[in-house]
Image (cartoon, rainbow, N blue to C red; front, side, top):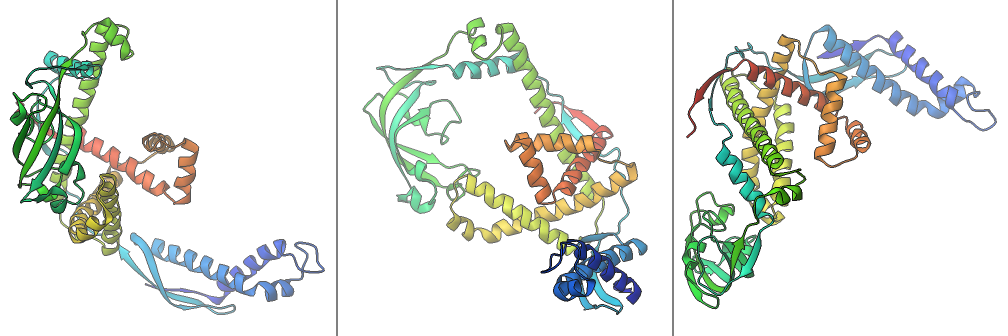
Length: 421
């Protein structure tokens, strides 16, 4: 896109900026703001020219895209600039434009949800978990039984090597002293505790395990492990009585109030999980209804954002920089695919919001900012300052718009209820 501005407009901008600087200029022998114009121009020529160039290019660029009704994605690449006092401004702006596509039907998208409800049994299981938070663990002189805690020393190998040679970050899976293992199913490594049932304090056993294919440590997935285990102690778990006294420890007036609160929490969790599952299906349906080319710059920026998030998550999980570096190609490939979907969805959400005249009010933005400040455990004023510093208001606006559009899709979805699996 070639943009031109006549010399008269250029000179007008130079004059206006010169006057602004003249009002503040402080030169030897003159009071602030009283220095002659020619002396101000001579001293501040570079600053005047830079400011005029920045303002004129910015204004001319915005006017050009408005006149041509171009929806630009990202920042323009400004080249071939011809500029100076007393001459016309000319430059070339290379821009990426938003994709053109026919908005698909977005109301009545199909989705399936099970008819699960919170039952009395669910409430009792949750109450048992609360009882477990105040459990007592007493050492007993008898063989280990189901429901007990096994206190063990162990060392593990995989393929005949210490586990840390196979998975460098898995120090805890290689060797531990006085480690507590619940004998309940699904705890620690599947099959580990079951092979200790019947052992007594002081006994030693060789335990063979199969690491699941979805095991948290990727290098061990689907492999076999061998553990040399010494049972140090057997501890019996004793749960407190479920009564008003226990309820008070959780801030409830009595057991009935605690039970009602637990049910409400479970129902909120179920509502959230159903909404999340529903929205996931609706987004997949919407993305599958239309294809269009995505702006490369938008995908590149979003890919960097996704890579940053993945690296941060891996670092928080204790995965070292060296291992992350080894997996960088995998991380980037996963991020690129994810980024394309996110960019595509953003364009669809924007068009739906435009079609439905959905907007984010100041109240909406304030509420979202408060939620994020609480999530990041930051003082609200500090969060707002950080937001303004990184020009994050547009991002906040897009988040609110995204949420409102998903609410619209959810409200108008064609839901089929199915029996729980």
